Image (spheres, each protein chain N blue to C red):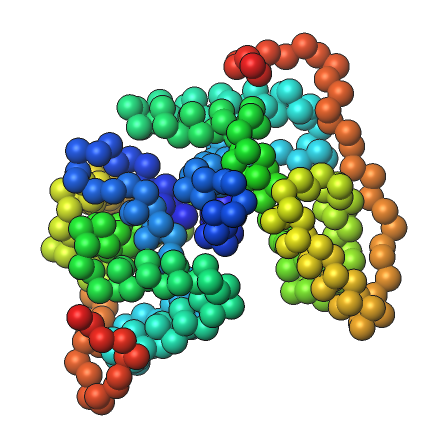
Length: 176
Length: 176
């Protein structure tokens, strides 16, 4: 969340986004993980269940710091409901952050192309031109480095699709 | 820096501080450490040398992201020169963050009172009532826990005073 909030400093106003709003959303968007942990597609938790757990965690956190918790909850809801351009931009930053981190791990651990699943699961999901440009730069750097080092991709990892919801679980908040 | 920026969400406007400004200063204030590392009083580097190294690092970082680097440099200078109420408040948050982290380590590693030097080196340096209140709460929790566990303080560690500057080193920026 720190890196994402720092990335918002690169906005110069020409993107039609409120930079401060993006910074706040970036800081808050994953706060629930401090209680529920990072629930990945490999955890066997459906998207609806994950959402319900995260909303509950945010409610618990925000209750502790009332009345200021209200502001943090508003930001979290704005991010989750993806209704503002800023929230959609920060969602893009979240995917960018994942790709950047995967590439950093590949370089640090000398295992280029190993974390391909992070690139596969985010491919084609970037929307904002500002983020697309940064992602394409990472793609290029990664391919150049892999070529130079003669790296070959490992067998593909199948990422479970957790969007299918077997049970009708209330998420504690309407999505409207 | 993440925790410090999150702490600014607790401001409610009654403190006479611009919360957004505090958030930005908290995010930027230690960015130089990404290049020069965390220079502590035990590193044998004078305060002036440390300052010069950090300004140089910030210049290098900000050059990479011109024209947006200018904004980050302005925030860093505001923090370093401590001329605004927000920059002094964020300096307080920096000390609070150190004390919070020391206490977290003591609890995690089951070594209560062991990191006393962080409490000694910041004692009496907190200025803002908002931060003072939080620090006092940590002091109380720490003493209660230490008493309950029968912890005794380890021998005191002498922290070198690096404010004395043997050499006249230019810091690259006037302090006015």
